[in-house]
Length: 498
Image 1 (cartoon, rainbow, N blue to C red):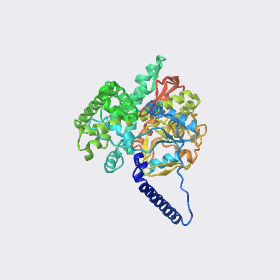
Image 2: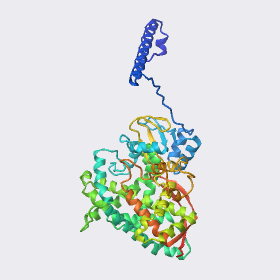
Image 3: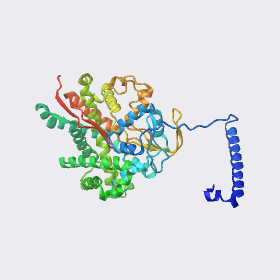
Image 4: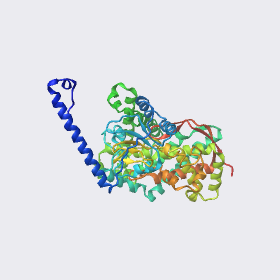
């Protein structure tokens, strides 16, 4: 339809022409409307239906305030507070993102499940594309890739690394490194009546275990320190700041933090090139490990930079979840000494090789991961089709949906007394509780290593609780980038009484 300018509207010589055009347009619109009504009536078997598109409640935050929030490190808590204020677990954010009609938060459990499991739903390039910026080749890893032939080849190619045989082997190594840490690091701390930074210590333990088993590499203390330090800088820049403010990549020359993150990427990739060279020099590499399968996968075309990118994100995913989950659970057990004693008593009645079968251990782990999911807010999906939510709200195809586990798992309509640490709630969980609790996501793009993460979490936690009693000296504060972490959490330990 052409636009009628003011000059044309007030031009007397064209008035009758415009009047005729408007009349024709009105008649045409009326005919089209009648045809639509006939179509609706016929297609609904004579029963006319009125289609309404109810919009989600919308945050009152301004665009600038929303951008600042999403680039901050307390996003899960702020989204949870927002849901409570709006009285809705699903709501719209005032955040324009090119390529998406709207940006929403979906924390209604059944709606989140539907999105995760929808075959047309994809990881949005607007969010996960930032992970490509970390790579020297700017190529996507499996973790940032949308589903398709190449994604399936990569996922299928590394899946055997998480078979029961390899999980048993990897778990045994994790326990070995845990016992070494208990003896060489924690015991002297206990003897000196000192406290320790839980997250930092457990990250070292799990990194050593993952490097040895998945990458067949004996990582040094210096390399561990470098990786933990540099990854924190990388996550702040690429996962938080650049995801919310994508223009930052064009301002590298004038942004010191961005330049420092680029240097951090260089340092980390040098480590992974050393890991690749180490594998190539092994006389008898173990078959079926993560690095073995990736090095042999023709999808990577033997390109060291692409392989290094893939290994990098496997390392991130392989150590953060376990170490930080155990840290959160230890904190809760320290704050709830009766729960800690009950778990120790249950473990003492079993042989160590049977600990993984302890129902109480599983319930404690579930409850800790429910209350403090490490993948708290960074998971997002782009809707592949129009959707009507459980409560009748309309979500348009292409909508960018954040699916924050921190908010989903604290829904008091599903979890009674949702903000309390109550392992007993899992003794007889409702069906809605079981369906809502998806800490590793669900659908085809769920976590490939979730079985390993669960096995290591149970083994490390049981080994620590069996021998030591933990109390909280300083809770620190929760902070998130890719994972939600209790920064500065300090605990003290004493020998557990028999």
